[in-house]
Amino acid sequence: MSAERTYRYATDLVGPEPRRTLSGLEIRERIRDGRLPITPIPDVLAFRLVDVAAASVGCVGTPQPFTFNMHGTLDGGWSAAAEGELHHPVGRLVAHGLTTCLLLPVDGTR
Image (cartoon, rainbow, N blue to C red; front, side, top):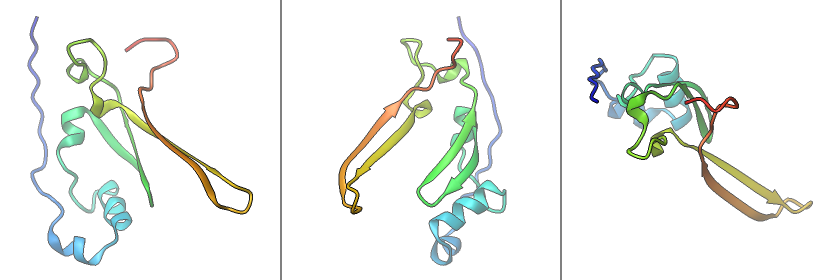
């Protein structure tokens, strides 16, 4: 079985001037709002940027057959990271964890 996929994507990149004058958050906000170009990766992996914050971005998409690896599971580009911290009551960080998670729909469909 084989399939063919074509797509269009912008070749513009964020130039040096915005990177000199804007914060990382401001750049991400402008990309989200369409005021600065986004890289081709959302088109390649079929997702879109929907939320930005100081230390995170939120993306939404629906996995497609081309996002699965040879084992029938999603490629790493479609996994999500989860981070947690545990603080002592006086505010001192006592534990930190980061993991990569695969988020599956409740009904078990791809």
